[in-house]
Amino acid sequence: MLIEIKDAAFEPYQRLLDYQVSANFAGKYGATAVFVGSMREFNQGDDVEAMELEHYPGMTEKYLQKISEEAASKWDILDSLIVHRVGEMQPNDPIVLVAVWSAHRAAAFDASRYLMEELKSRAPFWKKESLSDKSRWVDKNT
Amino acid sequence: MTEAVIKIKFFASLREQVGQADAEVAESHASTVIEAWNSATNNMTMPENTLMAVNMDYVEASHAVKAGDEVAFFPPVTGG
Image 1: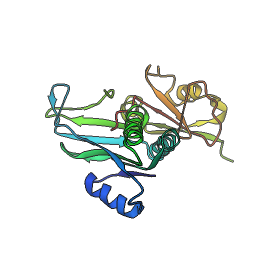
Image 2 (image 1 turned 90 degrees about the vertical axis):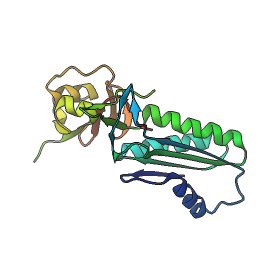
Image 3 (image 1 turned 180 degrees about the horizontal axis):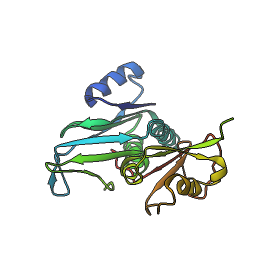
């Protein structure tokens, strides 16, 4: 179980491979569910040129740890990984990686969805978008 | 001796509305989260959807606070 907050661009699929090697659990799982969220170049009908992602250092990690522990108690999973960007980002940059490993697919699907939904609704991150003529805070998640 | 204080933090759009990122409130001025808000913001009306945390756990406005606590106020979250 690992939580990472990154202030520079990361490559989610490389991070996933590296984590799997370091976790040393090859052969123990039959299912890996992976979600990658990336920055769009559009939002609410406008072109978005860049984005600043702010967070609450400390509470972010504490909250993501809490939901990771909840997922591990609700479903029969082997391990989970959450990586989330903060700072200045550009369109197409990966924002979030959630991966869950389990023996069978149902637990990995369900736990990864749970982690993403809880992260979106309660983890203390905030997006501020730069448009061509102004910047604006994103006021709520869809 | 310096007076015991409660640490206050504001984030994102709420930080801009309040006009400060950090504040301190004397323990004698606040026994709950909402009292800490009132003291730190000079009784500014709190936006309806404001989220609150004490020592990095979500709480309600009536939650008790004491010296040494870190109380945070922020708008709805938009990560992921």
